[in-house]
Image 1 (cartoon, rainbow, N blue to C red):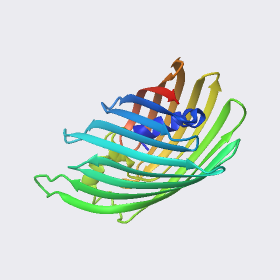
Image 2: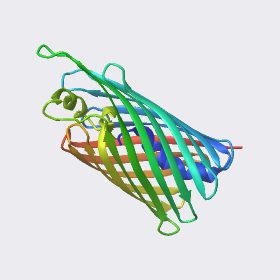
Image 3: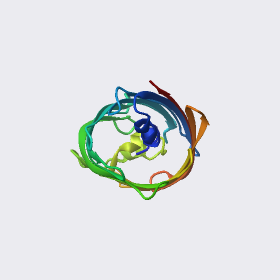
Length: 279
């Protein structure tokens, strides 16, 4: 998924759970060689050692093939409670450009966490409203549809300083997409990795290897996805480096590369900063 908030929340999850009562705030910017740009703000509040509320807002801007800018807004609210050893996460999100595509999402996860591993079963319901712009040759269309997603995430500690995370999800859409007939839809989704409209995935999977070196952390991520509309496959490779800026702050730098059948080869760079507080 090319949502900047997901990257950020995954990176700081270990820090927030370890902090107990307290708070984390952060934000970052990301850009790619297709002139895509995004910015995000995130925050987590610990009501107790086992209950966390997280929120995120983001905005991305890309240029469509028609020359029009696609400005997408994103908002997310998630509640996490750990009963030990089982936990529950529920979330609601909105993202889109009201003139083109809007989605209202609901997520739920049931997870088990032990000393060396965590396993979660994930469900997501997405309610879409897509409006394709009209042209001189054809009128615009409005398409209402939804999707159910089922997935799983596994995180395993490989040692004191190394961990591995596997994640996958598959979506079932209420309408069939046909790339030939739906050319106007394809033109909207095949523009940039930072276009949040590219979240119209049929399925996606990723594997992440993390390595801790004291207070510093390296992560290497390999992900693959296939679009629901055009059926185009995208392979992504990302390297991230997290290091302290002070006693209660971190900075994270990411460098990645996409090889996509939809929008070609793209290099991207991200910069995030995180600040922590405790009761």
